[in-house]
Length: 246
Image 1 (cartoon, rainbow, N blue to C red):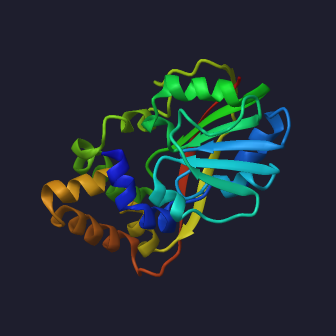
Image 2 (image 1 turned 180 degrees about the vertical axis):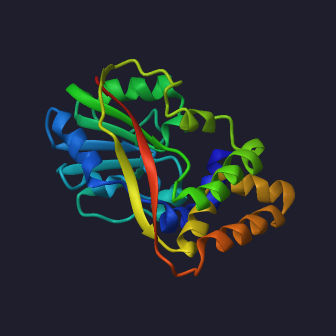
């Protein structure tokens, strides 16, 4: 299901998924043994990869979906490659930082961790990064959260629970490093939010199961709470990190 889903929505994913704050990669770079080489696994269309290319000299960005890679944001210091999490295509002992942003819940984690250990240089850092439902303000959150939890609840894949739990339930066999409180923040209009919601895997499943009506009903209620469609509001996603030394 996951490959089919991400192939179908790769274009929307590239257009509407938020990128990550510089403070995140600065924190990771501070703990990495060097800033020569980072591997971003499950990179999607490069939302984290291009930010990693700030402090890191080279970024190797992989994703199992060819459609995602085809739409990835180009950067001179980022090399994109279609590859599964357990087979990066990298040599042994070359990586200072291994990241998986909003992706690790799709992986076979034991195989991924084995690959991390193989490609990591001594003292390298591994980071699993995730964010849950967006938050705007009390009125809009009262529209978004019931849709996310109640309407879409039966349609989220089982792996989504790891996101909702902030990856606390996933095994993480590394010496853990405490992470600061970080968030993604974007100044968005109503069409930006609607486009982003359209990338959710549960929305895709809902439309297949029940047609367009539930999503259209959500759009109407959301629009009523938002006000003028071109009104700019601050949208936030608190980040949760599992960071460890390999």
